[in-house]
Image 1: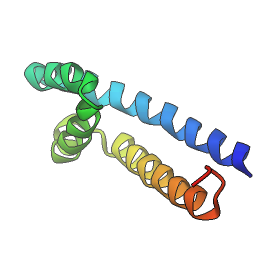
Image 2: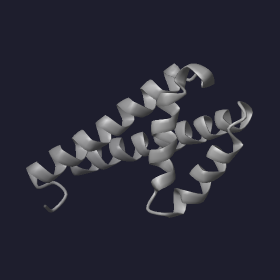
Image 3: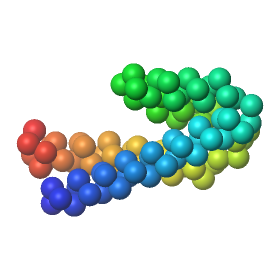
Length: 95
């Protein structure tokens, strides 16, 4: 069970990274270079750049034409949180 949860969480993490890259690329392509730079620069600050890109991606979803990407990213984040709750409550993650 633990291996399955970790594998699923890891897969969702990789998809999230891909979505982050797509949204940051959209930022640069649509004239929001400063926002893209801020996301990349704050990525090293506790992954704050991920959160900024996620929120700004939803705010500008129409401008970036990234509805599918944002839906996938949202599902991955919710899925990862659900896996963490399930894993911790069942004791699978040692908690």
